[in-house]
Image (spheres, helix red, strand yellow):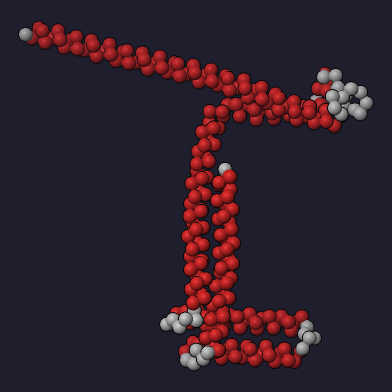
Length: 260
C-alpha cells in the first residue's frame, strides 16, 4: 500500500515537472524567436512579416511607456499587457519557424528542454504502469480477503444500521435498563455525554460484531453442508456410472460367450 502511494506521488510530481518544462520550453522558443528576428533572420518570407510586426509592437510599447510614465490608467495597462502578449506570440511563432529551419546551434536550449520532457514523460508512463499493476494487485488481494468474509461483513453492516437506529431512538430506555441516567444528575458510567456516545455508537458496534461472528459461523455451516451434499452426490453419480459400466461389460461378455 505504501509502495502504491509513493508511486502515485512520484507520478504526480513528474506531472508537475512536465508542466514546468512546458513553460520553460515556451520561454526558450520565444527567446529563440526574439534572437532570430534580432539577428536579421526575418529578411524574407514569413519571418520578414513577423519581424515587421515585432518592430511595430515594440515601437508602440515604447511610445506608450514614454507618453504615460508612471501615471498609466487601468485601460492603458491593459493595452500594454495586450501588446506584450502579442509580441510574445510573435516571438513564439518566429521561434517555431526557426526550429523548422536548418540548425544553427541557437536552438540547443529548446532541444535540451525537450529531451528532459521526453525523459520525464517516459518515467511518468513507467510509474503509471507500475501504479496500475499495484492497483490491480491490491484489488486482487482485497477481493481475496473480502470474498470469504462477505457474509460477516454484510451481517455486520446490516446489524450496525439496525442497532444504531434503535439506539438513537431509544437512548433513554437503554440507559435506564442499564441503570444509568440520561441527565446530568444520577448514576453515570463516565458522564452523561460519554455514556450517550457509548450507547449510540459503542453498543451498536458490539451488536454488529456479534452478528458478524454468528453470520460467518452460519455461512460456514451452510457452505460445509452444501459441499458435503455435493460430494455425496458426485460420489453417488460415479458409483452409478461404474455400476452401469460393469453391467455393460458383463452383458457384452455373456453375448460373446453365446456367440462362441
